[in-house]
Image (tube, rainbow over all chains, first blue to last red; front, side, top):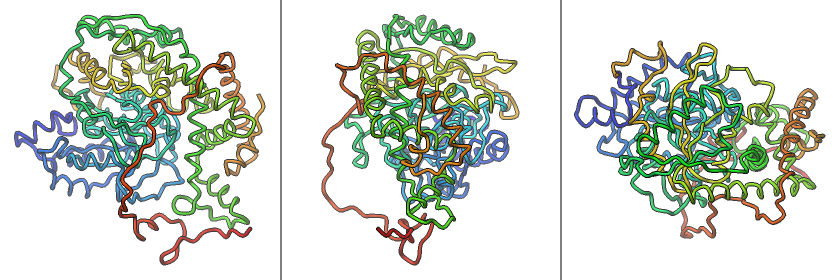
Length: 492
Length: 92
């Protein structure tokens, strides 16, 4: 095994036994990036010198001491570029650390580079990046998912030990599912968003993308908790996530929402998820039917609320204090704004800002935005009711595995509908994890499938525990993408 | 479903080409048609949710904290002179 192929836990064992050093781990990742990232395109930038210097100073006694971590390029790392994969911010150099980065650094981790994404996190395929193309390590003619596609591809192709993503409607869980890694969206408010470029402020959450469930727990342990710079952050104490992993699932009640097992799910996905649920049952979990009756309204609700909030958040990009300013000499300040924004934003971003502006505009606010907020209440109540009866809800992450690059380029609505199983968790503010649960054969490609486990608000310990128990009982997470990204795996 | 794309784009301060206006009009029309399914629900007695886990009246001690300083504040300015942003002229 090369060092870049290891999990956080495995790498820490190497450090603690003195077998390897953080410098060797960073060097291993840098050489993997040099060899493989030309094809994968996971990173938009990385700072080799800074990472090596940090490795030489790393304190391996800290919780994430000497562990290199890839960061979605929507999160500020001081001194590095934060582009959000947009031309508007192509040259933006972060003057400060996001709270999650400050916490990672305090825990000894090394932010190694910035990963590709859909522009301003708007998309489900990373095809909306204005700055680069990312491919799926399992089949490079396919998308890695999105919007945290670069982080997922980096972890899956072993170009990173672990990564951070952000999830507004599934942007951590769906790419994790498509690339075959673990992705955790924490409860709304569990992790500070200070320093995350805002997309939809009532939905955004930062979370870990990792090779194992245990690693996800380790990263969450470090980044969770309140923050005086984010007033939406919850004050609740951070429990011992890692310590709770080994409690098993005996007696745990796992709900299957009938609205999530519908016609139209690709047969390979359905089979993999059903087999995974049986595995949980054989580990001692009790499987129960539940209903989330407003599921079919989630996508429509989301695309009103998320675009409305985005239109307000992205109003800050005015080309005055930072970001792109049009070279056209403006006749007025409005022209300055309009030209700078027209040149700096890509198609999907413009489309969503326009839709969001429309649903908030005079005469349409009540009909669209207010109504969507009310339906959001109904969707939340569905989950509250379901969680009275179960501990965890199991479902597919996405109705189908990764599609071909370019396949859905002209049909935004079709891409939006792919988010049907992930979006409701953001609207309800609950937590969810995607864990590899098998493969689906699609036109000759063997593509990863993820099992989604949803937990109630602040229920991270339970979903991590269920996912960890499942992972220990299966070996999906040990199967690597095909060469050239991997040497043959010596493990069984 | 018709939507005045140009008006919304003006409000959002985004200049559109004719081709963009036409394309977005068609695509957003389809999306609005889809969104219309929310009208089949009776929400007259339902409260709105703005934040899923709302917290209220969050304060921190009213103490001064260090700011960016000139270098960091001006680092990303698209146009600047020695220690100032250069902005587009606004005369009302």
